[in-house]
View 1 (cartoon, rainbow, N blue to C red):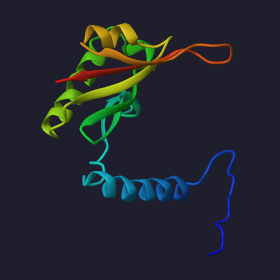
View 2 (view 1 turned 180 degrees about the horizontal axis):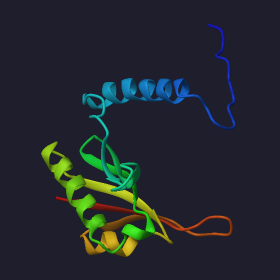
View 3 (view 1 turned 45 degrees about the vertical axis):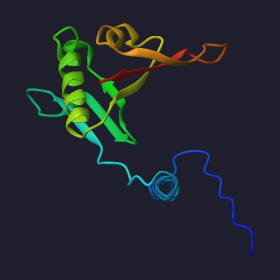
Length: 143
């Protein structure tokens, strides 16, 4: 057998590459766990009331028992209005409706760790801050 070609894409890979890698990983994971591929991603959008443009919101993925909140962001002018709580409530409802055992996420030191902890999320991992890296916290909430 000939060895494979190594193709280095140091910046901006096209969509085909990550999709192919994900597919190969999903096939392997299914063979190991017997569980099917991930459920569809989910999103909760925050839209500008005048333009209907998406200006923030929550984006999550899920699989293998937990939902993962990949992004949660609100523009400064919409903070302090309870929207973050509403987004999290909706994401947790989606996770429960899909039968997941909980939700996990990560947040940087300068972001919203106290917000998540007030919602019952607990720390399960840390990437320490060292010169050139900002501390990153991994939190989960088991239902």
